[in-house]
Image (cartoon, rainbow, N blue to C red; front, side, top):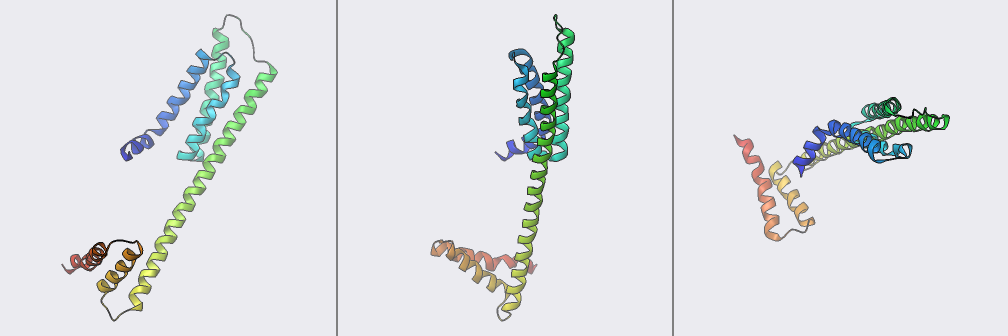
Length: 183
């Protein structure tokens, strides 16, 4: 499962661009009321904003807008009955385009803030653990460090409701941990 996730994240941009092209082609060939299916393009913009950030989401939004505009231009050039876009259709396209770009920016910004908070919480967690470790080292100098760690590991494993033999295994592993430092 992790290999699939890594593969998808490595090739995410290509997948999004393929999704956009597939959407344009599907809408062009299978949909009569094309303007009603413009909301499909919010999917790649939202996914890009969530996984890749604000900058790339806005770029994908602009890419979607340019493809839709190119589609309408080429459709009018190749059509037998040339019908220019009405004022209502132009207003619909402009509002859709602006909301698409704004959505990409907002989703990307929220995602970047979430990632920043997670990184900050991880740094805080590591800092608290460092402080706790220093406190434990200073608090009980009478016993060697490996014995103190073994004792605390035993308490943690008892709190985790492990069996008596497993508690002893954890304590033994904690005692043997520093055996590698003896070299």
